[in-house]
Amino acid sequence: MIPLTKQKNIEHACPVNYIGGDEPRWLIGSDGGGFNQWLGARNGSARKGRGGSGHARGRAKELAGELGEGVYAVARTMPCETSASLDSVSVRCQPLLSSITIGRLTSQSSNPKRLKPDEENMAKISIAIVFIASFSLLLAFTRSFSTENPTDRRILVLVDDLALKSSHSIFFTSLQARGFELDFKLSDDPKIALQRYGQYLYDGLILFSPTAERFGGSLDVAAVLDFVDSGKDLIVAADASASDLIRNIAAECGVDFDEDPSAVVIDHGSYAVSGTEGDHTLIAADGFIQSGVLLGSTNIEAPVLFKGIGHSLNPSNSLVLNVLSASPTAYSANPKSKLSSPPSLSGSSISLVSVVQARNNARAVFSGSLDLFSNKFFKSPVQKAGSSNKYAKSGNQQFVTELSKWVFHERGHLKAVNVRHHRVGETAEPAIYRINDDLEYLVEIYEWSGSSWEPYVADDVQVQFYMMSPYVLKTMSTDKKGLYHASFKVPDVYGVFQFKVEYQRLGYTSLSLAKQIPVRPFRHNEYERFIPTAFPYYGASFSTMAGFFIFSFVYLYSK
Image (cartoon, rainbow, N blue to C red):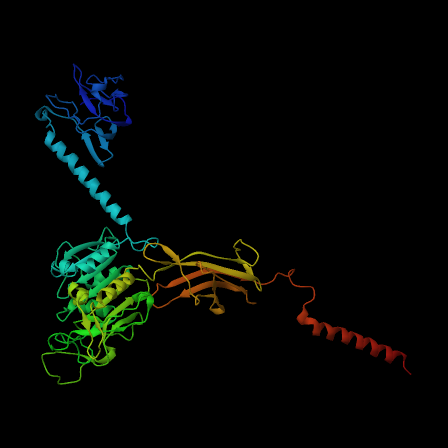
């Protein structure tokens, strides 16, 4: 064994090379040969010296050859941390978090195996691949949904057949033209994953796979619901062959598709006129919700073509809205059989397309027709039965495009910034208010327009001054540039109050703002010398004193 008389911990850029000669020694040097140290020799000496730059060029080398017993061998080189002790030398390479121990060799194992050049190249290629993959994943995470840019998003599209990419290409192209990145996968792809290392890979999910009995990979009903619970968005399209998987996802969100698997929506009064009589399952629907934020500011003139199944809304779920409803003459049944009992769904209570906005502002769209999004329905002319108006193009494309803008937060997405309050006439925010102080509360509210934040203008934003219940409830004024403000007097009650803004409006993301502030009473030296409300008591006291004085005078000096 080589007796090492010194111990060193050296930070350097290897290589560590063997120096031949009568006395085998170890040279540990920095890149370029700037520093070398010989740690030991057979005779137990420890010497320092400078070696030529040829012994330390930063290239990976390995010692080979016939070595006698008691000689140590070194393998790989890169930025390392080397430790030398009386029994061993250890080289720990920081970039790969690996370590190489230089141990004592015997005569039976005196031929260390040299690392082949091909193996070394493969190791370098593996390191490069890991680095590139890690960088790509980090880049993907940094491009995820943010409140500062709600439409910088990636969407996973699951389909039963990849032919949908061409049959529904107009819809997909409109999303891509607006800056969305679509990732198409078959619904049974075993590599499907919504998240990796606890981070979601997508910000939206489109399920155009109505017949899927189960999803591939780790995706199931619970995973889809967790995806929505995390604030992500969802589009689900079903049809007459909708599986229990799709029905269960919809039911969890308050949308109940017709339980009869053979039932579709039939309308003998508002069907779409065509060359053949048909069974009136192709409906020309125009029962739109009256909301500019959901369907855009431009009215949809042409009816929407719909062919599929209807659904009802769970009355216990107040978050689901009917966006497109059937006419009063519609009903849900099997068109190939006669009705033996009244249909479970009928009239305007049949929802064709519904939306959900969760309390965490996640959004979802549920449609009973996959054909609603197809190129065929986008381009088809339409004429509603009983109407003389004939349209060269249905309203499907406008309806679907505007609704997709809403569900993916291109419209109706609000944010509140610069929340502040102060006494009237001041600018600094105090740590505490006093009862009867005059104060002012301000907040800026903006709406995402699809490309930038624009001032949000409304006349129904209210602020509460709240402690157990609202003591002050006041509608805020706006300067039409996004700034809302309200002034009021602090109530004559002390305690811990909150400024609260709870803003919920149809189609818009909800705002919930709260800021706590204590309120104290007057100090003993802050009251007025004479309180106006106490003047009657002052008068009563002085009148009593005057009456007593007069009574005493009369009593003493009268005969």
